[in-house]
Image 1: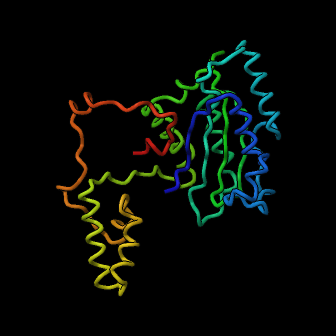
Image 2: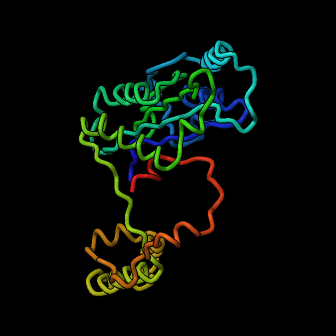
Image 3: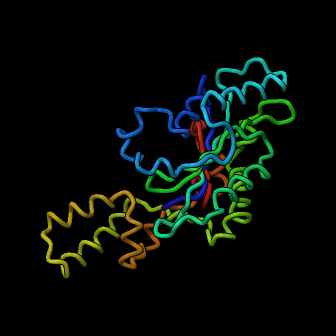
Amino acid sequence: MNFPARLKRLKGKGIVTAAAKHILRKIAAEIGIDKRIDPARMHLNYILRGPDTAEGVAALRNSMLKEAGIKKLRTDAVQALEIVFTWPFPTKAVAPDYFEDCAQWAEAHFQVPVLSSVVHMDESEPHCHFIMLPLVDGRMNGSDLFGTSARLSMHLNSFYQQVGGKYGISRPVKPPKLTSAAREFVLSKVRTVLNEVSGLTEETIEVLLEAHRKQPHALMKHFKILPPASTSAKTRGFVQTMTRVMKPERKAFSFSEVCA
């Protein structure tokens, strides 16, 4: 599933310069060696916002921090926020104004300084990197701007209302969570069908099914299979939810993680 927007926090010394080098295609080791990048299509990339060099992006950031009176950041501070906007229709040409509309939405929605925005047309999925400095009222506030799952969902709702609706992009829906019994049920149903109509050997069928063992949702959709209710993943009650052991906070979320 192609998610049109993903938001992440950039942390660590030098991360802004490193990110700028990547999106401006200044890392020679990525070109040619990284098969995702097609050197013959790099000339199709273009800058929407910011300087045309990584050094320029870093200098812009430093000047903004200096102007705000910020001399030093904590080592664990969020140095920048990055959104990757992807054109979610693999078989359709990118709409001419799509990435510009994405950039304008991000500027209006977050209302923080923009360091760089570059569109990449040299990979299989056209996309746009949009890097912001989380400078709010003279303070760096990346964690709060990034927010909790509820705030991320709010960001996502705004994106689909303001940009998605214009281009026929609807909010992706996460597939239902399945228990191991439900997954095995689906695989068993598909196995039976393939044994009856495909003419494939059992060994070949097992190889094909193995790739879907953890996530058989594509098989469910194609073969129109519904798992029995008794094997559906259970929903936690209020008490179980409020008293369950919490996992450590993850370093980054993406819009796709809150699309359910």
